[in-house]
Image (tube, rainbow, N blue to C red; front, side):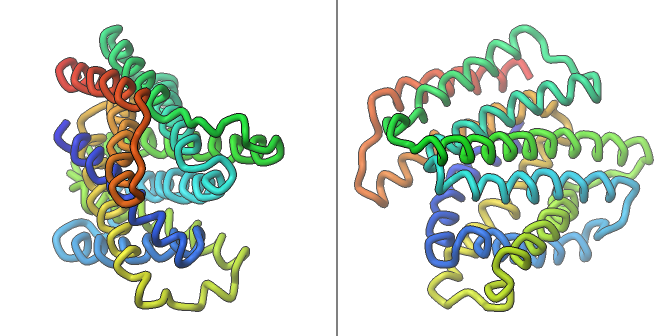
Length: 292
């Protein structure tokens, strides 16, 4: 469960870097470059001390990256400008937790206990209360429909991607091939990088060949380190031993920790409902840590 908490902390910080990188580069280009940097860093580790692109579970990890990083990430970046960060994140994080628990039950037969379901539900309820934006009525119907569709697609991708990682670790164990989290993260990032590159080439072929300006590099590198490198490595560490239906609700609480970072940078103050939601989410996460 230390891995889940590490993921929570990393994913709480990465949106701050991601937002600055997207403002300077555009969302698709920012997504591509963060994954490329992550692939280089994680690849150095994986080919030096891990399994590189080997192992019986490589296909599953690569597929998990295509589904989670690739489809889930691209869809998330399409939802953000339509619904705003709070509502997009709310739908994606809560939706992915539900998808992960349901998919793992139907596919892998993993069943959560009643107390685990209660704690997970409490966490998601806190996230909803803490993140639900005031601007909901002001979203245009066309933006609402497309934004929700992209957010739901992202939730499906990220939820299924987590369960595919669980399948990958089970496959590696069946073949008696222990897989370290860093190599697992690298193999997943390769799948995500493939989709991000293809989408960028199709949508913005000219931008695909251009390098980021110097002022964007600190945000790209920060985004890569806290997201695909450290965040996803911790995520894989958690999924190696803990059901996705438990890990995903804990990780889903990350946006509640993002708000204080963003508020400090932007000079804003969270609403009272944020604090209530945070208390409920913390209680739910604590319960999952105790009864995992």
